[in-house]
Length: 302
Figure 1 (spheres, rainbow, N blue to C red):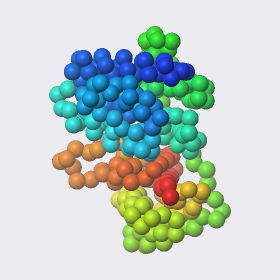
Figure 2: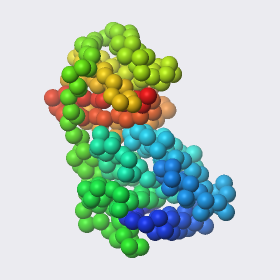
Figure 3: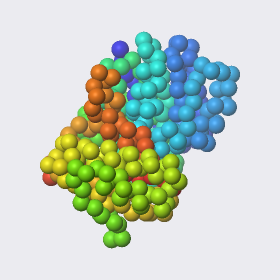
Figure 4: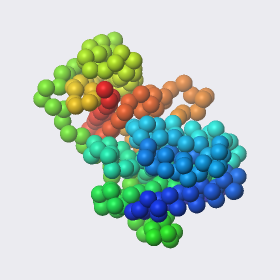
């Protein structure tokens, strides 16, 4: 089995469409199940160009399915692979686009590195387009370290900057800025009901009821990890930013598994789903972990 993970560097729509269409049509001819997961405008462009392939290609809006970069591996890529056992799968995945925020980007870049670890030993191909005309040059430079091969000017070649994916992902384990001075805080312990009530009170002021309850559930999962894996106490801060509610957890634990929250545990296990569920429920999850402690920040859009 072989895993193929090239980055496509493009600057024009015609270049993008031609490369993606060639990748998809080749995969379909080879009998691969194919998924195209790219953000909205590009999705419609590709869907129109491949309309003759009918249901032989599945489509997903990455701006929705991959709004939180932390859920792309478990809920988009690995889910599609799992739905087609015994087959090589081919996927176009575009997780980074111009409108990604500075807060989102480290999670996006870590995701790109960790694809290589998550799919090691799997028979799959994942093509990741990068719009070099719209993205910051530093983002394009990072693509050379997170992808073993690159497609540039129509030519495929090995990346001379590709490195160990876990070590590369660790470079994006960056400290988070402190909560704003107006954040409300709570020191919590084993009484998780206090965490749920605290988050619900703040979330209900800004979010529809169903989304507020999703944030409450995610917060409860993170707090439960504090209780299980540390001395049992942590600090929670909650605040509102334009268009979103943010919850930040800080405890003395050290999260050492870079794929935590990005790999669904085997069905035989009854633990380890907390961060996976948290990624599924939130629009962004940022984690910074160090031997001195771990900070986890949850974002929920209004």
